[in-house]
Image (cartoon, rainbow, N blue to C red):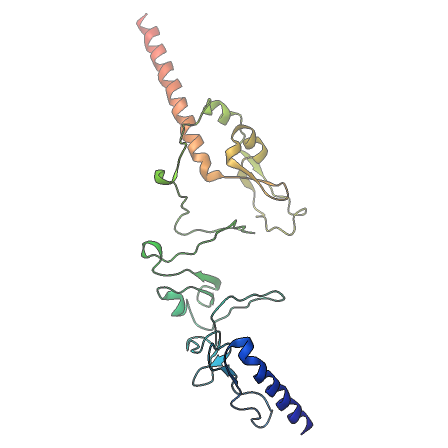
Length: 255
């Protein structure tokens, strides 16, 4: 009885504070349902901060009409400062939410055994897309089924000039090497165990600094995709040399 009276007093005090805090009346429809004394419903009659739907199965925060497709519908930002966000599903590829125009989802696919990021459908050009507005680090292998595209439209470029200097001579200074990653010294990074082929970033930086980036720890990386423009100019330079040699040989034959 004492606990019941104490709780009732606290609720009465909260009710007197609610109008100034939320500009609405706070109601507690069922205070003491048997047998546990828990609340069945808690909501605001104006700008609802916590509500359930008619069936009492779906909860909404910041909305008076929780979406029936989700157990929790939050109208606003969600901050997670002390734990993990866990996603799971017992169905197949993706739910209806992840395949509806205007919606996006993160789901654990049973069929593909992977965590799926399903971008917003009906976006730019009508296609589904996921936009990452910062650096993306992949600690492992990135497998792409449809190719990787880089923006290159001339309408978004300025100060366009041809590659300067003797591109062929610069390319000839670089080394294509075989190597193994230092697995034992970088256990926190999931380097491939297989033998690798590539370039040395420090050597590339001396000739083409635009193709090398350095992270906050000082480690360097090479933009291999942009290296094709360098190789293109090197091939063109080599073609000119071949044509000049061919002309010289033809002139020597004449004489």
